[in-house]
Image 1 (cartoon, rainbow, N blue to C red):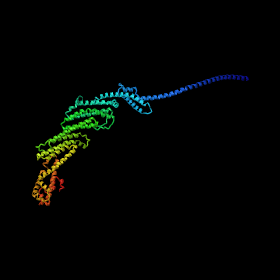
Image 2: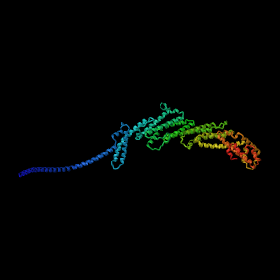
Image 3: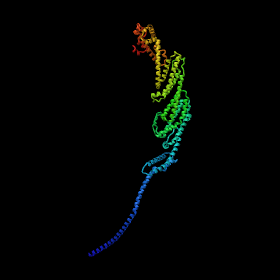
Image 4: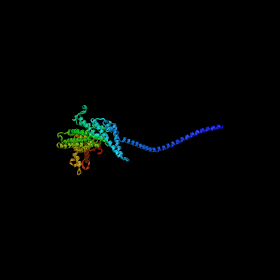
Length: 609
């Protein structure tokens, strides 16, 4: 066992010796590893010390790179916003690229760049802003100028093409190009002037296609149609020109009715251009239109035709003022022509008035009706009034209507009144038996009948009525004296009116009972005649109402005179014996109310019973 233990111990020792040997070998390896680690650590330390500078440099470079990337992004955005690319420059400058959306986008971007440059100049904190702005403005100025030149040439060409036709369709490209290059509108204005002028002269001399419609100057023998056709053509041309310009500038029609008043308070640039272009386009039409219309006016001998032409011109003048404004050349021209037309008309009717005053009445003509000269003169006045009434627009007040025709009435009616008044005095002097008062009233009544249908003659009718009332009063006075003389009671009535009571009336020769009895008998016979109902003298009055009015007024005076006679006879101080018997012996038997009934004046008899 000991041997086995020794043997076992010997084995353990051998095994442990090997282990010890391995441990020593391991120790050597560990020492070598420690040496290697120390060397590595030393090397690492040296490496760390060497790479620290590189890492610091790399970090710095990384930061610089990030800064550069940021600046690159800013520069890229700046260049995209403040510079044009090759395609955009080509769209603006190259003739091979047509005018279209691409061109307009490039122009819009250029204008936006220049606007942003101005904002950049106003900014703070960027010292180089002014230099960059100047560089950008310089680089875009050349491109923009070439773009403007390109659009100007294109617009001018298109305007020349479209300006040759009266009816033109405006494309969207042209509508968008107008605000960019408005200088080209000068070319359009010149072209449209020439086109409208040529079309107007063609319409005057050659007419429409294939001769229809016929040339306007073929109707020069008919002044109303001639002038009307020219004015209608100009009015239609203005309407077409307005529609074309509204389409060109992209404005919508304002929806106004034809002939209604256009509102001119808009201050848009497009509306100003439209007004100016319309004014320039139709301006050249004014010269040939004015010459032809004035020639037509001067060649007229009829005052009616002159007035119709003047009225027609005034209508178109008002229409043009409402359409294109009072300051337009055409409105001014029409105003001048209208004044010339009215002057010619007034000269014509004044000449007719002077010619009427130089006329004389026929001394051998016993008629009391208005003479032929008055009838012709009144017929002209009636036609003039019909023309004036038809020319009213319907929105004028009574005062405006009256004021517009007052001068014509003064020029036509006053000479007529002076004519038959002055000539009637001369004829009455040469032919005493001729009834001047009835003749004048007939003429006045005829003039009133001519004026009455028209509402704008009220003032003149009132003036004539005052003259008629004066003449009626004078004729009533004469007629009253005449019928009382015919009835035989004039002298007695005058004596009763003048009796002052100094002596009894029965002692006055004119009013002696026998004379009074004879006068009452004659009065009774007169009451049985037809003159009570109708006066032969007044029957020649053409106005029945005046006949009735004057005759009844004279009968009323006669009734009052008879009443005065009865009162005087019945007075005791006049010493008439059997006064009631004297008055009651003859009709109306001293009853004044019965006389009123005989005269048909029952309405007044109640006051005198």
